[in-house]
Length: 240
Ligand SMILES: [Zn+2]
Image 1 (cartoon, rainbow, N blue to C red):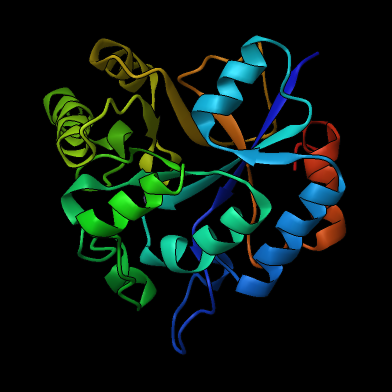
Image 2 (cartoon, helix red, strand yellow; image 1 turned 180 degrees about the vertical axis):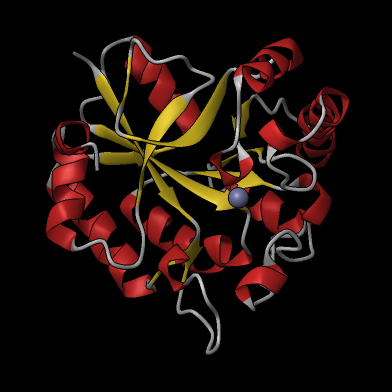
């Protein structure tokens, strides 16, 4: 069966002192090693658009989708130069109401305000061949708000991001992984082509493109296990 592994990252860098949710950070050095390993395994890092097109043609075996949630500035500053060095690309899911600001949705809870890319930074990210997708306007749990508000978060973020990029935005990421059947229907209605979740495992040709599972790459992920996730059906077998 043809599989597509979609890796989830948040921050690339070192967590500031006092920050909780340190697991969301992968150090620059580890990210470099992970990309190095992918290349050694003959695997190329790509954005979700290219990954899904390859899955449809059963050509996704030597690809891994590199996805970054929330649109942090460190994705451009720390990850993009490494991606470029290895000839890889990635997708960043941007919260359209927080462009140029910070993680308003969880800064208080985790004790750190992390800078988010502004319009210029998003432009640089795209110029390097990377891609962006929508992560709503304000990062709510979509399955816990009413339908009209969910529809607004889904359609308005797309509109705002298309204004910034001047190009169609057709990929989506559910904040906090929260979604239900109603959200899937709203995404379909809004014309999104793909949506990623926090369900674990590789995607397959049988996956609903609006409910794609991913594999979380957090701070503690060792290089050996990373390689197993990238090169085999390990995540699916282990449900890890
Ligand atoms: Zn998020």
